[in-house]
Length: 349
Image (cartoon, rainbow, N blue to C red; front, side, top):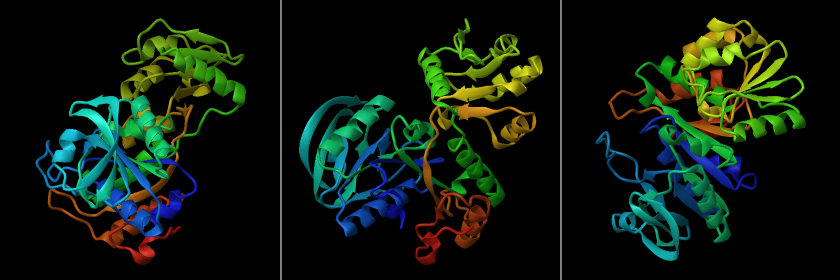
């Protein structure tokens, strides 16, 4: 069962969809049902807005969020007026969204609900802690790839990734992109307590830095890594150990570094976590062949992958075929189709 993967292990868990209609609401509703059966009190918030029956951007039908009695939720007064659930307000916070202040409430009568949360990582974490203090045993953060920072270790202790047919009409491309995301979420961390301490210090300065073998930090006089790959390359020396990038790592930056110096093979490029890497699967494999080494300060704890074989565009895959193929390529993480049930919850290697 999905809940068994996280219960008694993690307090704050994010569900991240690779795209809209990837099945994350199905995963959320599944967790709500399992928690209710076990008498476990959930807290639910969103890193944005979720639960509407029709996507306001694509105008496609969406799964709605169903909450059981006792669930603690974070949302706004406006969205509560659009929901068919009875909620007892426990606290009116000072956290704001485009839809108004966030309210914390306990569900008194089960039903469908729309939820909204703050846009910043810090506020999502603070509200998660507030829900824990109000009695929730596990907090579920409803996220998405366009808000994938909700998977960041600074917010959640574990992440469930929802993926499926919405990514492509080609099943192999769905698998390729999912495996790539799983790999990014599982990038190795910087080793050694002293190294981590110095890398974190450099990242906190918010500027690109190069750290040498003696762990001296050299802050570069550039605003970001974007369009500055050559400048970074020019500052990599024989004794350089880490290139620390506080923002996003993109294709053009790596290309410029590779074209400007061979010394990149002797350093590790470090980002905060895997949510900061924006490179396609094919380009990523190319950079790996060239000898690019990317590490993170904080690895993401990816604990499960859920599959949705149907896409709103109308195409679909055979659920068991997608499940078996995905499990063939991803063996270290539980992969499941929550709509199949039974033995399809297991982990197959």
